[in-house]
Image: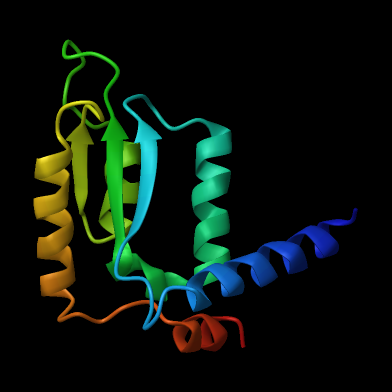
Length: 128
């Protein structure tokens, strides 16, 4: 399969998923490890930006997955710049214990966006 075929397939699947969420997606959750971003992480973030354009930035919440309570809540400069690109919205989370805090942040994010969502129309506009 060529890169073009893979890209077209990703775009079709993305369109399908967004179209299933009427009127659109209020929040996309991007989960990253509590560690410096590696080249694969960076490439995936660039791919998200390429597929959705910068119009997705206001609809992304980044979760930093902590594997133990002993990890620090410090961000390196590179990771901080990624967060700023996506509106600075991030949350350190132990996925086993902090879901209520996450839900509060997601509700706040939807409120800040005045209920605006990333719709099929928005996706189509970004791909033109």
